[in-house]
Image (tube, rainbow, N blue to C red):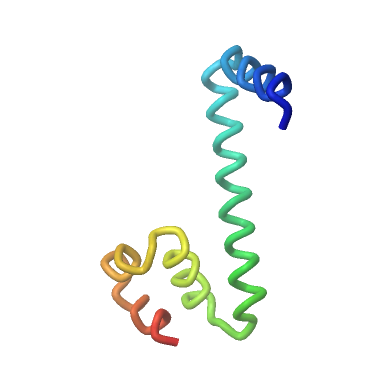
Length: 79
């Protein structure tokens, strides 16, 4: 990204109303979750919905926190 384009992008974010910024961040977060979930489904096509959920949790939270939040995640990590 050129410095000029980056400067203009940052300026446009500064001028956005808070609700528009929140909507933008929400949309980007949703897209990231969807891509993570799609990647898990592609790499583990035979996984149950619970295993898919746990694999996404491991990616997003990291293994230690995922195991604290979801103790059954430990079984997924060991596979």
